Length: 439
Image (tube, rainbow, N blue to C red; front, side, top):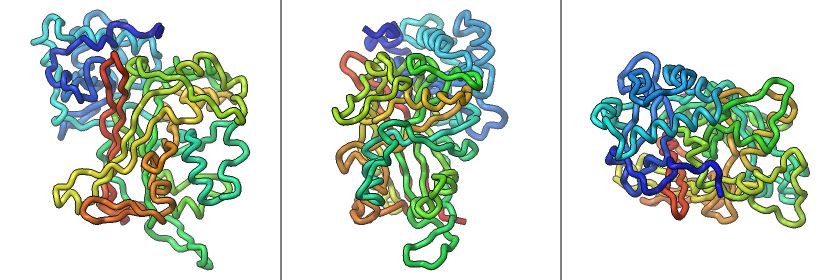
């Protein structure tokens, strides 16, 4: 039995916020994700809020007015901030107490609903900001399907490098270019070199791609020089969002040797701005996928009973694409990929533990990307490089357009959903961005 399930996960509970009761809502009362919002055309710092149905519940204002009941002073103080960092630093116990207080205020039998309604803001009237100040961003390569597909394109005799099944591979990204969903993405310039060309040229990327990923947010971190055991890693994970690691494949192909990704990746990374907390995800934890018999077992520091039994997350992911022409014709976005986060070779706990294993100090608000989420089938490949097999098998869009890589005006969106019998389904909201022409 999951010891962390409580009344906030009860699927029979309803909210007095009517839109939270829609069957397909991402944000029923069983979710209560955290984010930072600002009223449209507003100025000044943002405010911490919770998504409930189609509305945003202003936690900052409600807390200052005492509408959430007696909160521990550190939690109340954290809610007055313009980012979630201070709350993240308090760890999962504080997030759990806040979740229970918000759940009590928003459930259908809550008293003083009329007074509480004063802290609701329609979702259409807010702009979502980054949920926290991101000190560092690290991107991993945790899907063996993605690693094997990409490797086979460039190294057919050795698709996986010798270290892949032993070590969670990652690289340090650029936190300054992480942007919230809805932010337009400018096509990057970079050095490009065709195989037959004698020298590279500088120009707009001709092979712009998306990567469907899941992002983990660090809550409590660790002191420089100390590590985080995998048995404790889940207590350091504050929650998850969706992430699009935009990639210029032609720039990447020329620059990545010998130190890995650089300008091909750091021009933009889009996240869904709502953080679905670790406690909201408790019903959807699944066992870590078993490894094939011939694969090595994880080294001892990356292996633990809790990670084996509940290290995976049951998240179904969808990527859609909409061209400018499709939008002009009123055509629905085209689902390019559907994949499951249960297919990952390395778990989020293993990524976090490995990151800190050398004494690297993780801090509240640090961002860890899973790497492209891909599955065993063509339709479950999580980027166009794989989906079109390096452009040789283009995707045909409604209206007759084809895509090998992204064109100017294309909009890419990602959604995530958790479903399990006996529990209310929850979602992550959208992670989307439209491609603008290079300057």
